[in-house]
Image 1 (tube, rainbow, N blue to C red):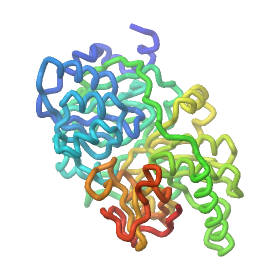
Image 2 (image 1 turned 90 degrees about the vertical axis):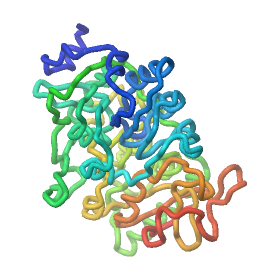
Image 3 (image 1 turned 60 degrees about the horizontal axis):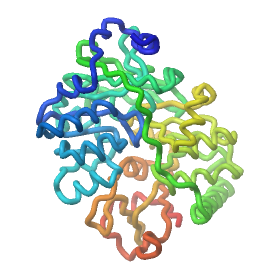
Image 4 (image 1 turned 120 degrees about the horizontal axis):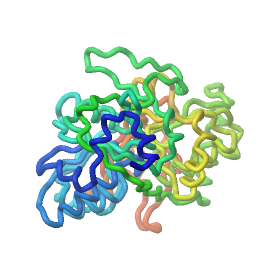
Length: 431
């Protein structure tokens, strides 16, 4: 056995479970509900889904796929294109599966990301036959250490009948220790989440599972698909400046300090670019409490502006992947990854007083926001976590360029064609 694999597989009784991706894929049957790790192209299962794609060339079968959020091309492009996916949830970001959803060929559940764990507990999602979970290691005491996202993996692991682990040795061992896995109890029986500071750690470094559930371990060396965000431009810099001026005015009014409050920034190029604008601002000792840590967060850590950042996923461009993962020890004590029902939990968003910055597809003069449907009829990606944050944040901010498609479509309309966030959830609009 490869020495690196032996080192990463601390629970030696599981060595007999090592199989090929094809053997693991053969365990999954037509009609199964399958949970998969992964959140915004990070920490997703890769080699077993591709083995399912190969299997589909000779066999017709369909499965329901639930994840943390969007995945890389292995699932949302190739598996979808192979006709394997019957139902998908709760978020996607690939044109292939998007077109299949809009044509009615794939059923789609567009849900608030913090609600998914509750849907599993209630039996609305499930029963989950298999969880395919990417891990950087399995400890001697049986903790599965996720890679660079947590997402819904802990709740899937609790409720899945069986688990397939993709042990990905291309991820750095320095990921061990950055996770904080806390899972609330059943509704009606749980206590308050014991967190009063975004920098607190309240859980384990890995996911507790019954080792008997682990039916297969597949060794992987496949890297994450890099983020597709584009660099900041003149328009996003202008939007950042407007937002920074707004925060300065709030400080003058006595409503904020130079540390602001914990910041949440949504997925995508515009939100990332706006956050990047903090690099040359007066603000300091910032804390990020978000769902995704994108390039801008690590740039702000390097600039000495952000002192701590927590989320459920790290999603980076290729350049930043090399920089961050090649020097992860530098960032390890400044970052933390949690389950998405914790990173996006309304209880914590309200308690910690987050400032939420998310991207809108379309917004109207009343303050309503459309985050999901192009022209009100075609699903784009999904609501994601924007609803979790906007309604519960201390400040709910939406940003968008004022037009799309080279000026052919206005992002500002008299009345939005689809409402995801009502005027009551929106405090500030920046364009």
